[in-house]
Amino acid sequence: MSSISDDQMVMEILNFFYPRNTISEYDVTDSLGDLAAEMYAEALEASAAMHLVPRPTYTPSLSWLVKEGVKTFWRSRGEDEIYESVRVTVALKYKSEFSMTKMGI
Image (cartoon, rainbow, N blue to C red; front, top):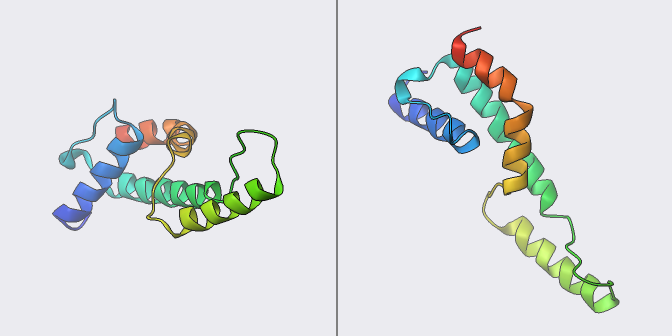
């Protein structure tokens, strides 16, 4: 990576996905940076899709549908947050690739 701030960002992203397997700034390589960018982009895309999923708590009615439409609109306008279920799924999907890249394989 070219600068300290890039390395710090990569480190934070990887530590977000793998909190038990902490990465230091000195462990960051170009390959890990590319992997972190790919994981983050996939997580943001999946979280954006999750914003559109209605969350029924009971038998839906017309008023429920209208309320969920409004909630979906506000969730889609919110900040880029990553759902925990998405974080876990992306981390699991890239676990082997992360381990191999970290070892330099």
